Every structure is written in C-alpha cells, then in structure tokens.
Amino acid sequence: MIGIKQEKCDYCGTCVGVCPVDCIELSDSFIQIVHKICIDCDLCIKICPIEVLYKVEKN
Amino acid sequence: MTQEKYDVVVVGGGPGGSMAAKFAAENGVRVLVLEKDREIGIPVRCGEAVGGAGLREFMEPKGAIISSPIDSFRLISPSGIAVHSSAEGAGYVLNRKVFDQELAILASNAGAKIQTRSYVTGLLFDGDYVCGVKYRFQNQEDREVRAKVVVAADGVEARVGRFAGFKTVTKMKDMETCYQVHLANIDVEDGVCDFLLSNKKAPGGYIWVFPKGNRQANVGIGISGKFSAEKSPKKYLDEYIAERFPNASEINSTLGGVPCDKTLSEISGNGIVLVGDTAHQVNPMTGGGIVNAMKAGRISGKIIATAIKEGNVSKKRLSEYDREWEKTVGKINERFYKIKEFTMKLTDVQLDKTAELLVEMPPEKRTLFNVFKTAVRYQPALIWEVTKIFFG
Image 1 (tube, rainbow over the protein chains, first blue to last red):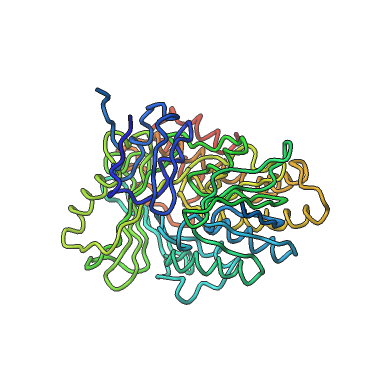
Image 2 (tube, each protein chain N blue to C red):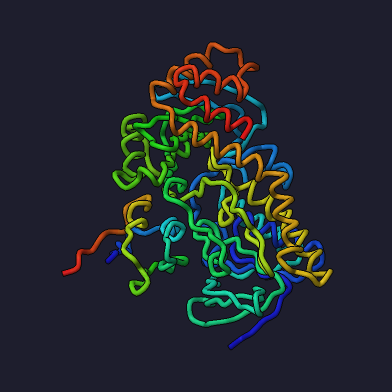
C-alpha cells in the first residue's frame, strides 16, 4: 500500500502523470490514492520531487 | 443536478487552456474554463523562463508579468567550463502567477467565462463523441456541463485525455521531476541564465540559475524519472545550493513534473482536443512548455470555433489541429527529443571535452551540427544517434 505525508504535499500532480492505472485524485489541496485500483507499482513514490509518498508494508 | 450548456469547455486554466479559450471565444463560440484550484496561477509548478520571440507573438513583454529579462545564456559543463551565447531580448523570467492570471483575463475579455474550484471528475459521452464533463464545484456540489468540444488542458496529470482513451501517461524516463527555490542574498550575474549539465549533479536533466535581479535568482533542477528513485531532485538541489550559495535565504520553493516527450501521436478525437503538457507538447530538450502550450491553444481554439460553426466536430474535422501542430512545432520537437536522447548518453568527461572545444570555436560557428560533430569525436559509437537527429 502507498502512504501519503499529507502535510508535505504541494499538489504538483507529477505522481498522477506517471500512474499507470489512474488511481490518484488530486486537486487544490487534496490528494488521495484509491487503494482499490492501485497496483503498488511504486512509480508515484519514485517520481515525487519531495518524497511525499511512501511504501506501507502490509502486516 | 445543475446542467449547463456551452459550445466549448476548457479543462485547466494554465497558458494552454487560457489561449484555447481566448481564440475560440474570439471566433464566436461560447466558452467555459474550469480550473480545479482556488486561484488561477497557483501553485506555480516549476520554471518561469520563457523565450522572447515566442512570448512576443502573444503579448508585449512588459509590466508585472516580467520578473527580469534574459539576454545571455551559459551552458556549463560538469567541471565548470562555460559556453557563452548572447542575444538581446532572448528571453524573460516571468512572474508566473501574474502571467497566468493575465492570460485568463485575456480569455475572459474575449468572452470566455472562467470558473475556479471546479474539479473535473469525468467526461460525458454521446455515442463515441465526448459531449461534456462532470465536475465537482467548490468541493461540495456535483455538476455536469454539456459542450460540443472539450479542450483537455489539465497539465501534467493528463487525466481528461485518459478519460477519452488517449494514452497520455508519461514514461518514467521522459518525466523530468523538478524542484526549484527562489533564493535571496546570492552573488549572481543579472541577465545571464546558467544551465549546468552533469550526470553526477543532475542525472538526465540539468540545474538552472535564472537571475531575478537584486541579488536574487530562481535556482532549480530537473532530473529524469529514470534516476529519481535513488535520490529526489530536492536532495540533489539542496546539495548544490549548500555548495554554491551557502549564505542564501530561501524565499519560496516550487516543484513539478515535466513530460519531456514527443507529442502524442493523436491530439484530437470526436468532440475533444488535447492542449499543452497533457498532449506532451513541451520542448523535450529544454523542458520549456509555456509558449508551446499557448501556440497549441491558439491553433486549436481557432479550429474548434470554425468546426463548431460548420456543425462538424468529428475527429476527422478536428485533426486539422494535429496536422497544423505537426507542421509548426511537432516536427521540431521530434528532433529535440532525439537530441535529448543523445545528450543523455554523454558521460561527464565527454561533456567537458565537448565544452572545451566549443569555447575555442567562434560563436557563429557553434551550429547544432558542429556541436554534435564535436561531441561525436569523443564517442564515435554515437554517430548513428547523430545521423538519426539529422536524417531520421
């Protein structure tokens, strides 16, 4: 699962542009990952300019 | 549910969206622009430099939109060899927020209606035609608006095109992930823009220093998504600033992603066109996208208005935009893409040696061809790449 450091995000939209399954909702000061659709490819984590996104290991 | 009707709905109030709106409205159709954010022009998403000639096609470069003029460029090699070139009025550092708002006002004066806090969540379809959008207004009310043509100008996210089946996703290697800070209290030469190439300091991209006058500059970095997993652009830039401008103060920071790619193979469909970053219309070598988006907006805006008046908004009719774009900018961008691919293959040593030879060459001889001839001298294996640039 992908986690979001909400207070750190600047809403630049770069993660949305590389997401292969279009599972990120982002507007103004809002960001959310639709986990049902997410395939955990981690591209959003890799592209974020300021490391807002991170991997959450499932228990 | 509220349902409105317009001739054209433009999704996104950046330079591309505003120009599409302006040129469509000027040509006699009713236009609505939907901007998701609460204010046009923010957040600024990286880069404020723009070419002078391109900008002057649209407006006088004066007043609050301009932060400072640029009249020379320095390409700096990894070890610090500077290749200088100057041209008066070559470019400008913009006040991007003021600039974007000025463009929206131009669209508005032409008759387009601009609406902020309107987040598009989907498209409306009539058979295989796009015929409007669904959007969330002020983060609380779901609305629909019908339109004969939708202009997707939603930037790097590029979701609106995807809703209609366009393959707008940017490949990791082509996404430049960028971070920029506005620094004060630094020693920097006004009017001179620096571009630093270095595989070590900015892999697959470059560091820029754009002076803003009064001991200030925008200092930024873009790196290829191929390399950003190990280290983010912010980390690279923080290191560079600590070394080069240790006493600087940070006034603000901006960030964003730039699709440095060839233009999508299709940028129009039944009842829809794609404009700007969303259509991958950025210059893939420099990452500059402002003027290209404005040009795409101008071309598509006029064509849409005419097509609507003719009563034919089919893909076939709207693809006049594809052809016009290909002729004016698309073809050039294809060459820039090959140059980018070539440059990314050069090692730091090769970049240094190329710069050394270029410095000795008189400026008028520094043509694109000579630059490549010089670079290839140190890596003959790249001859094939150069051949592709000039003949492919």
